[in-house]
Length: 231
Ligand code: APR
Image 1: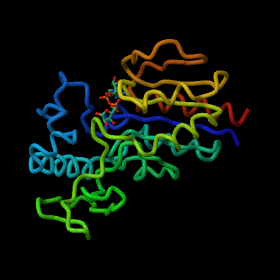
Image 2: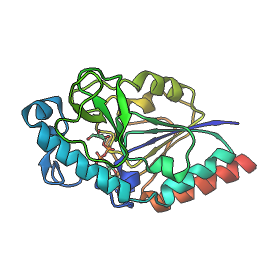
Image 3: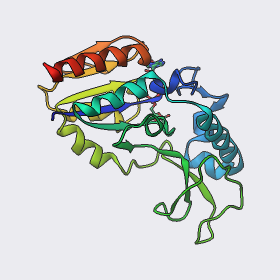
């Protein structure tokens, strides 16, 4: 089976009702992103950050996977399929994808602010000030904030290097190192990008752009790839 690697961003969950990051003048639900998604913001006002993520956690728990998340699962019968997502929601999991790497963490997990390896599944429960890990330090969202390292980037690079086909869906390709993954894909491998707006990514070999929302663009692409696999 050929290997498909799929990089997704906020745009794939937009039609499930989860707001993207860069759509509203640099504000994220009314907040400066650095206030709610950076180590500096956390040190300055941890309560604001926890409340912000508690709301995100609730919104994500209410959202349902859309036709794009669901269509990607169909590829698994025809291709070895790996999703690499920048999203912190669990809509790929709930759609039924079996191999998902979260580059920027997950909303449903919390972690120790002293030891990043202490991660706990909190589901859609709220994190409060005073909720601590077993070492006694405050719990924080298990998400990668601006200015923090991306621990999963090395395995993501290794997967991208091995891709026979690479698909990018709903990301502005503005945030590194995630945006660099496409550059590790072999030059002769077909690459597809589904986004209603064309991200500014410069010249890429063998790239086909499907300038449509995820629910329609991914459906078309999946049908095309399944046909190719059966040919
Ligand atoms: N279908 C597909 N794409 C869409 C749709 C849709 N219905 N609606 C919007 N988009 C596209 C936008 O055109 C844009 O290119 O989704 C992209 C969203 O871009 P961003 O908001 O920048 O989100 P993303 O690229 O995922 O952000 C990357 O930045 O804030 C950090 O860690 C956070 O993981 C996030 C990272």
